[in-house]
Image (cartoon, rainbow, N blue to C red; front, top):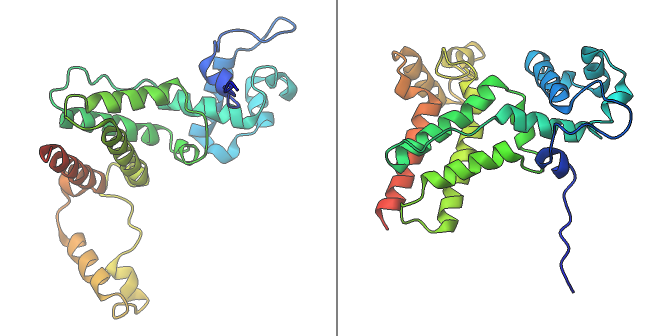
Length: 236
């Protein structure tokens, strides 16, 4: 029996020739134009504002005409995500794996700074597009020559990638050290100091400290993650 490769839904749109017009009458639209308009809409109003009807209105065409180019909203959001991710960073000139991985992580998190809605899409099962696979290629290439086994290389890239995505909400506001989800003052206002004494102590101390770039959650966490990877490489 011969195994047959079953192409996942949406793979053809992601990996095929996006500039090729659909069959039928002469097209008045193009797939790249549709995707770019969808990205702009999500950037300005969020992913929840996106619908095929709304997108058609933005483009000045009938809703059904969009389906000549993209069969479903799910396939549209896959194209949007890969477009938002963009080209991977060029880490070829970087000296050493750590510098390369730091550049890779910063390029990765910048995707979610530019397109916050993309964070909701990367947690869904999906076909990875060329740009996302390009990021994977760049991350793995950064670890070449370290002596790591292939499985370690992949796990490390996934580790850094997971850290980036977990930190993405905290880097939305670069002007602070992250969202203030809780504070000692708020707990005191509701008479909760005794219930959460350690939280109050730590948050009060942090509030009194002059903010430093090194204390920003993303910066701090990235250093610690890379320190752990360095320890693993040094142990080989």
